[in-house]
Image (cartoon, rainbow, N blue to C red; front, side):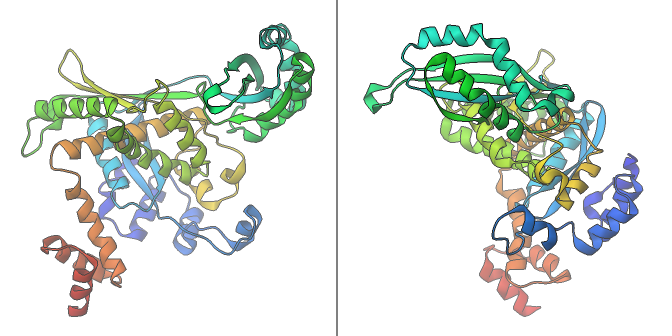
Length: 428
């Protein structure tokens, strides 16, 4: 990637941005032409085969976040999102963090979890022993149910058993749950896991004397995590009104509040997910599954807490860490079908699943840094409202050059609202 063509990317026109990505060797000429002519949108011929009762497309703007240095590799990150400030915030944060060495990531083994949930198990203790003693037979049956993933080096690797105790206050009986830990390679793996769970259920029923109630994957992918870390010298945090040390300490304190206060933690984590979701959507992955698993992970201690942590090291630098379960895929589903998803893979330089996890968790940490920094310094509204002005201008009916003219006027207006935007438009 030749980054010299990407300098001041946000100042370029639409066509200049696409041409710059071609010069940076991130897009081919053909991809650029398709993007200029079709905008990367989904065609009717594909759309009507992806979902039932297809009637059209609900499009999201697709942009790119700049300045990301992840494990010493420069990365342009595609993001599909409608919220005005997200890409700007991510790029701003990545620039500061990149100047301090960028993001360092660690990705665990990629194991997805499948569950067979049993009811009416008369003797759970004996059933658990039988399941553990039959471990290899269960794994073999699971792999026989989906031999193609085994040929690619994946498949069922281990199992565990959990007893869900009864809750008499809610009139809920006990359940026995068998977990399979499955390597799905480059796929998110829902179909692979579900096929295996259905394949082993009859044998587990025979072993336990229970009845298989559920046979499905879990989106709580605790065996598939990624961690990003960044270290920022305090002098890089200085603003007009605050010293670097003050900003550093206020970021640490804000993170502490989000750790102990669920009301703050939800908003804190929503800011992280602004970035995560936008990249997951752009990549063609299932953002609902990612969201559900990550929010469950935030509550793993029994209280919903902040996903990120910020502290000061012995040198006085600000250190941020973020760990997330990320059962992401690079093949399967809409990933290989949607034109924008295929374009996003090209922009990301054809990452494997582990690399995509590294990118996602780094974007989440960048988004979190940008949000907290804004909150503890100038406030969140300064950046938000500047970008919101454009949305108001468009809502009022502004076109082309009118949008920027009205947006600039709105920034100086005593009341930034739709009626004010309409008034300015009528004057133009």
